[in-house]
Length: 485
Ligand SMILES: *Cc1c(COP(=O)(O)O)cnc(C)c1O
Image (cartoon, rainbow, N blue to C red; front, side, top):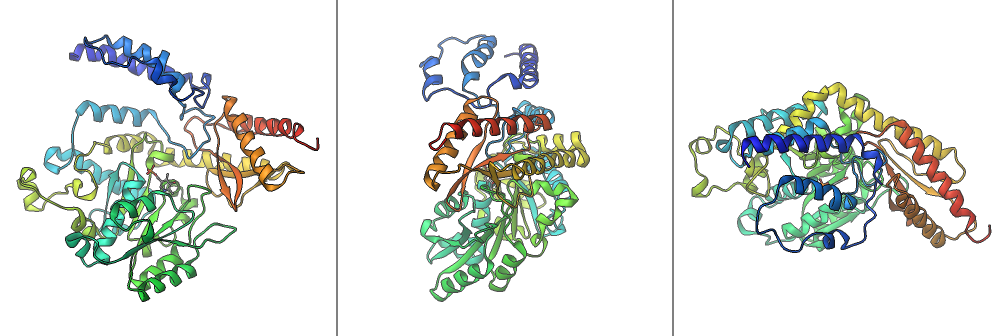
């Protein structure tokens, strides 16, 4: 493809994306295709001869679009938001256009140095402590995901807990990781990948109402392991759990970790970016005093296309000691002089995309003010929705709901718990099949509940209102078909 051909097709692609985003409400939110349908519609063999780019675009529209779930649709309320935005899409396009692989400072100094600037900017925007900044002992780094961030944190924690022996000799003693039943599943996977095994993961109790980790039980588990000769490697506290946005008491958990010399990782993958708003800074309580590492994802709620997760450490020493290596083929004067950052030492893969470009583009386009307005819109709509739910005798909201997620249980008078859960799941299927919205579910206290996560870039009040009207109507219609009516 020559530069002139690229210019022509590039314009077509940008026009296609603009039309897609402008008309996104005309699509059903959740793809309704059956397994295998898309694959069967595509040729099983690759073309021998090159094809015109127009064929790719028309096949995207004709064959693939039915198999797309429209994450940017204003009626997308499933999981957590995965915001896209114009500046992020363009930033990513520029990154592709430059085609840089930024594994070392020397492979593109601007790729590294812009990243340092934007992660420091983000630390300031979120009110994170000064020691997380690159000019202090810590530093931030862009990872592909929060899952990678917690694995990298665990490797640094193991390095410190074993006085370097894990990095040198591997796991020769038993180490443990402390999480709760509400912690993201990526932590257990990190334990398996790091060689602790699922058996090295301890489940700390949670408060049955708030679902927040119980620091007293954490202390008991840590002391029991120590007495048994097991080394506590890391505690993961979550600020805004995936299931219900529960907030673990970081100050109390941190004090227990400090007393016992255990690494504290704070997973704020979804909620962390909300602290761009001063009124939500309480989400950072205890982070400055106690967190050894902290992660949040601009790719969820901060208008930055997937993938972009940021990990900060209070002290980059153990992280670099755990992950640095310097084979001959990567040797260069800047690295040897120790005057530059090589972010490949801060992550699992060697190669790295120029992700800082899209985060930079987002922060510059919206400014702190625009980012705050976006978060406030999501929180405000969620609080309104929670009010409507609480006022309706047919539904019961789960408290608290401080952010953009509201969990709620439809009531089904006359049904026992099992039958009621089945009716809730049936309601969810009907709503998602309607094409106008997409919700997901979770379990709280062993009961099925619906989750409605607000925070899409295009979601306005009318979309939340329409969705709530439809939920009430479908609930009433389904209730009438149940026994006893
Ligand atoms: C979404 C989420 C994760 C995983 O994020 P990825 O970036 O997809 O790996 C981890 N922890 C919490 C609390 C989350 O909500």
